Structure formats: C-alpha cells, structure tokens
Length: 194
Image 1 (spheres, rainbow, N blue to C red):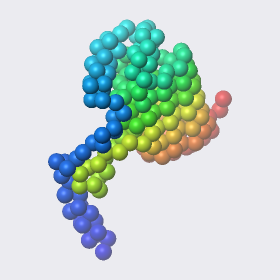
Image 2: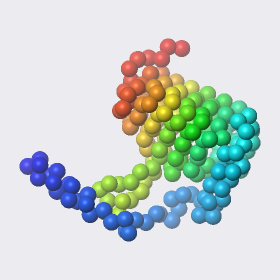
Image 3: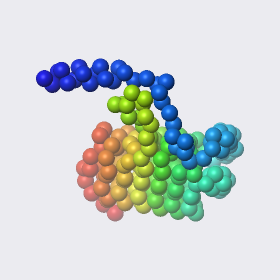
Image 4: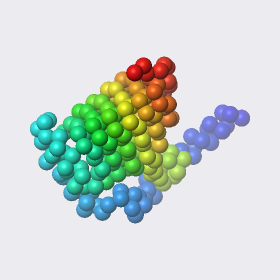
C-alpha cells in the first residue's frame, strides 16, 4: 500500500507544467523597473565600493527602502534581492558573500552577525503544485544571534535572541534563544555561556 502511494506521488510530480507558472502581481513589492534599477545599482555602485565604505552601502540600501540601523557593517559582496523587504538593527554585521534572498521580509536584530557565505532564503516553490507556485515566508534573526560561516536558513524560520548557529548548518525550523545549534538539520546542543 505504501509503495502504491509513493508511486502515485511520483506520477503526480511528473505533471509539473512550468508554462502555468504565474507570479502574483505584487509579489516583488515594487515595479519591475524598480527591481531592475536596484539590481543595476547593486552590481555597480554597491558591489564595487571599497570595503571601508559601509556608510555608502547603508545609504544605498536605505535609498531603496531598507531599514538599516546605525553602525551596520555590510560587505560589498553581500547580495540583497529586494532591499525594501530588509530590516537590520543597530551594529549588526553582514559578511562577505552573504545572500539575503528577500522574496519575503528578512529582519536582523541588533548586534547580530550573519557570517560569510550564509544564505537566508525566504522563498521557494510548492512541489505539489502543477504550476510550481512560488511562496514567501519571513525570516527573523533576533538580537545578538550569530550565524557562523555558510549557514542556510529556510523560509519562515526565527533564530532566537543570542543563539549561535554553527558553521555549515542548515536550519529548517525555529531555533531557541541562547542556544548553540549545529547540524543539518540544525538542533540545539548546549547553552551559550555569556
């Protein structure tokens, strides 16, 4: 019986028809022109700015609707899909080659660190939909949390205040405050000692 269900599920997945895919009218939150203009600015004025020009990159992000606190450090190699869906609290750091795939809202709290090569993914597709429907869910990184290098955060996840997510971990559900969490999928392993 279970094998029959699996076989039917596989057959249903084979009915994916991308010609039916449609993006809802306000999915991006801004016009196509606005999106393309941001991508042009990001690949030139933002990405080519020297490392020390943190204020310049904060200015550009704010110009496009991001809520960026004071003293925020964002490296020029970071990528932000839609800055108008981004909020970063005071004195937080966004490292080299971080990808903030902000199809949905991303909120990074104060004094938080998103280390190099991390990927925060707010959107995906419904694999059960024949039209491969896209969806978005917000990501929240609370105050004083630290995502170590090359961490993946799935849509809809909240990382609790002061939590540490170990290098190369993949997070698919909320992680509790004040805990060190590691693995793929990530699990809490011990308390973070102040």
